[in-house]
Image (cartoon, rainbow, N blue to C red; front, top):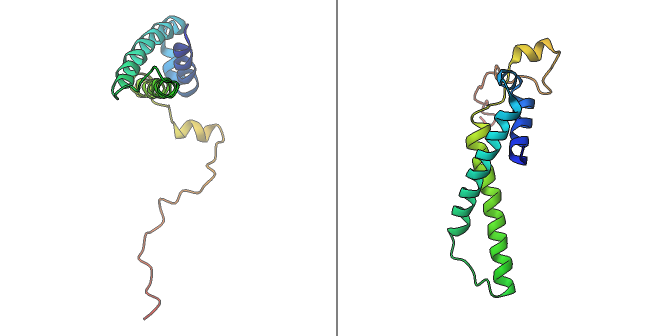
Amino acid sequence: MDPYGQRAMSYVRENCPRQYAAIPDPVSFFSELGEELRAAVTAAAETMANAPGPPDPTTPEGWVERLGQANMAALMAEERVFSEMVWTAFPPETDSEEDEEAGWNPLLPDLSAIDREEPEDRHT
């Protein structure tokens, strides 16, 4: 399994345990998903990297600038593809009932019930 498949599998296992448990063969599923992710990231990175006019690669400054653009395009493509193919497809499971059963308490109080009254005019 490639790193993209491992990353997706780890995310789903940690954040979507019910969906992960429903996958009959997680290794095969995430191996195939990893290959799809790699192809999509590669295509998106190439598109993003070719968008700006390339600097002169024959100079050291141009080569470094082009390398920086390619690296940034790869990171942006990876973020975009994972967002579309993993994080959206497997939204994190949140179940407040499970949290309460597990003894989870929020750090901050729930302020949604506080009336939002207008402040009194103190200068009159």
